[in-house]
Amino acid sequence: MTYPDTGLVAILRGVTPDEAVEIAAAVLDAGFDAVEVPYNSPDPLESIRRIRAAVPAASRVGAGTVLTPDDVRRAADAGASLIVSPNTRADVVAETVRLGLESYPGAATPTEAFVALDAGARAVKLFPSTAVGVDGMRAWASVLPGGTGLVPVGGVDAGNLADWARAGAAGAGIGTSLYRPGDTASTVAGRAAALVAAWHTARAAL
Image (tube, rainbow, N blue to C red; front, side):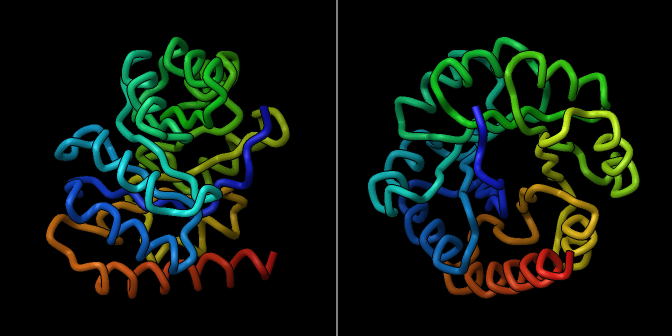
């Protein structure tokens, strides 16, 4: 399976079903490539269902903090096409791939990254990215199979996003620097637009 270039993923941790569509639409309209609703949000599967029903079919909607194969299946039933985890579990990756979904297992070491790839993933979430660092990601890229997507998550913000882009990241997951529970859609849209501009400016210079 080949994934599209990951791009920017909005991590909407804490979003509620009643506000999920408005917030998701704001970040997607600003140019984000995907939205993710973590399982440790209020009624996450309902939020995923509502977002999936409301946004264009080409929009990518994911579930985050996915820890078990059953979590994968429930997310798929709700309409998720991306499965994002904070850790590397081969059975979670395998079930994600079996269902034809994009797998983004979290890895903090090259060993975990290789486990994820052996299980069928084609991209790896660097988590926490502050621990791996830009130089660490470059070192990983030198030993992982060509074409492996490396996606930093955890501590990515407007101040360092361009550094990750210039280092070759396939995308980035952005959480609290984009959305915090209680933020309005207009506030989130403004942050999203600034992040998208920083990302594309850095990528264009490669």
